[in-house]
Image 1 (cartoon, rainbow, N blue to C red):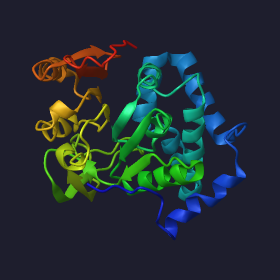
Image 2 (image 1 turned 45 degrees about the vertical axis):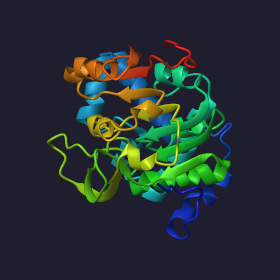
Image 3 (image 1 turned 60 degrees about the vertical axis):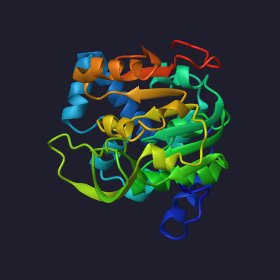
Length: 289
């Protein structure tokens, strides 16, 4: 299965790369990001973390991207800022995105890492030095533009961008339901998602047909994780370890049984993220977050 080995598109996508050269990641402080973070901190101080999160979700302000949309910031410049924010998050050692997951995953090394639901590439680029090949799987074209821009600007040559979805079958014209922000798109409709685009979908078996062993697969697909697992059932003996974000907590025991019955041992990193590795792989070093 072929992915994009490099940034090759010309035209509309190229405008994301050129402005980046005028901003260094080191010392780049975007006032809009500072304003957004101050808003989050203030709400947490006034109402507590859980209530703050409820307020942000109810007002569609959970992410910087949503904040920029709310103030009608130009979409083109939003892309540029998201690129720079992602690069900054990758380089810093404190206040990382999903800190417990980041602390675990940064220790992993090997030949092949598959990032399913790569979004704008935080984990794909974070592990660029740790793996020989990284497959960043992301179906939404806007996110693919950002992935390409970051890859090109930083020469992340090991990252191959795969602009399609992973599911339980190979198909074209599959509905990708649009979320309120760049990390909210999914093959699985939450019931209140009506807007969608069409995308290509393949199974992990198809994607990985040319790879003998896969060291780590990260799955964050907003509720469609069971489709990903279904499409991997015939190649599980080639997959060493997983990090899976479970969106339906009611299926926690079902996921645990699915993994243990297939000879994986597991540990919950935090409430939504589970790490699993093959129990009979002597090369595996079991590390808790």
